[in-house]
Image (cartoon, helix red, strand yellow):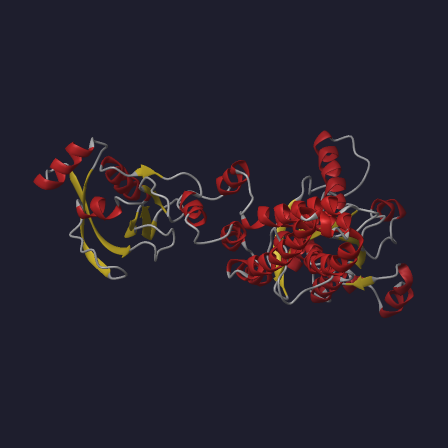
Length: 461
């Protein structure tokens, strides 16, 4: 374990709350807390007492004297303190967590007092970085922490939890171990040219390389599903003005989110809200009605509508009983999975509704007023988005960096089996694949990559 400075930060979100947590990690944690709290160095025991600290920044000496004399400038708070002795702690170091009243000003002053006694303000993700640097987690497991924090669906939580529990790491290390064994076989022949039989060895190791490439490919097959899991199913709600787009948008959400009026062009920007359906997050993006307009604001909104369609997984084309499916709008959706929704069906007679069933290959008749078939829209969007996407009940790759490195490793192994490669060329390709796999777990990741990853974490984590 590396010896590092003692860091401190508020570990709970900004703002006022009933309880706020301050985390301190490092070799001086016990000494510092002992100077402001009646602390007993007993690991994993909850200790309740009075925390006394100076109300402004001082030198360490000044702060110690203030604590000793309990001057009138002190601030006190009843707190709970828990001590986690390294290496059996989150970071692998001595860790002290203080549960104080959750006022943002109070928590800030406590941190100031601990800094005055020798702690250093923690940077973004510095606690999690120490977990990785002290060998408590691989890099992919550390990244799964931030995915767990930001997860907005059950499927995303399950996916990030699988990585956090080491499922990805275990699979990668197993593949890497097999590739290292293959490399060792190659090195024996390369180091002893008198027993040179390259053709025979290449024929022997190719099936082994292929087996590892297939293992990686099976993980890559989950990437498309993983993108939907992490980012949610993106749905563009499209249509002409006044066909009831925003009313239907509100009906799907179950609340009044978009402004609805009889004035055409009320929606001038993209409004995004999400729901949860079958454990997945579906993001509906209500867009500006498409029409020719000289209004500059409306023109910008229409341009954003077009951009939303480009990034959508599914397009809902909304029309009503007054018009058929718009060819111009359908052409805008070319190449995108599209569901046609005919709104205001409560105004249609059964005869008229039956006569319009053939409007489009997939048409749902609905009413934003009565709620008819609104649930059917959610179900159909879910089916369309996941049709043709390989789904996994086990490990799912949701991290774009992991997907990129897996693609690099897979490409290197395919290269090793292509053409008339010499053994040293095969060895180089296998070594490249091992580096790509190690970039995921952190074994071969550069310092710049590590810094960039943890910079994306919040302070206190």
